[in-house]
Image (cartoon, rainbow, N blue to C red; front, side, top):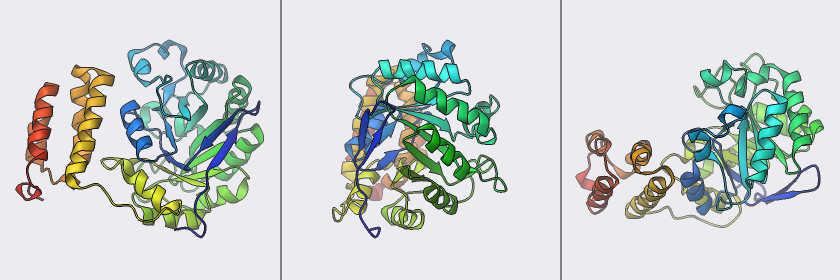
Length: 339
């Protein structure tokens, strides 16, 4: 455990609107992953903040099929947090107002996505090279809505240009309530290992709460990152793939709540089955059966499901077939599966 356990934090918007994050352990916004079924699951296991997949601020995309699936409503776990992607102040302001009208209690600006299709539109982590643009975007967001605004960013554009501390000070001056920093640059994408020195510099540069993000896959790693950075909380991304109960383990370890016993193999199958049912409900059967395939791939290693069995699952075309496959394999003992 860090020198002192993590403590809940309260964020404030421009009009004093408050949002409490307890525990300060967040699920990162991830396109194609942090959908409502996964957010609900991670929240149930103890994540104090779960943020939507990034939503484009472009007006023409507000009512697209993809955007509708990503929108929040009153059933979403609180605090309801929406991440927006864009580079136009007026569009971002309008999108933020729309999200709040739908029930958002926190708006997060994406300065972290390194995807080529995002960066070529001068959005996401590409904005790390444009501090003046960032300043305009932050001012527009803070002025547009009363709820707190957060910012997720990378350490810089590349390893020779790590300007996250500068961006952090700009964000603080603009009235941003929370920062999350991924310990990689835009150029790093998801390669190599995350570094935490720059996150520590960000923490030292501002009075805002800062969440450390990058390669956090176990309580021991989270402890080390918190000690190194002195961050107020952590954000977990790919580390939660196939193990949403990681949040329960992190909460127990970092909030001084004792030892967490991970779910048994049978319990893991049950968790996965519950998630898949929510996926069918959220996306409909035709799309749902495709979404479940990637999640099975993330659960598979711990469940000792080999590539041959995964290939069989990936050929199934009906939820009923997937249900039968899961039930059959859940009832078989682990030794029947090659490592």
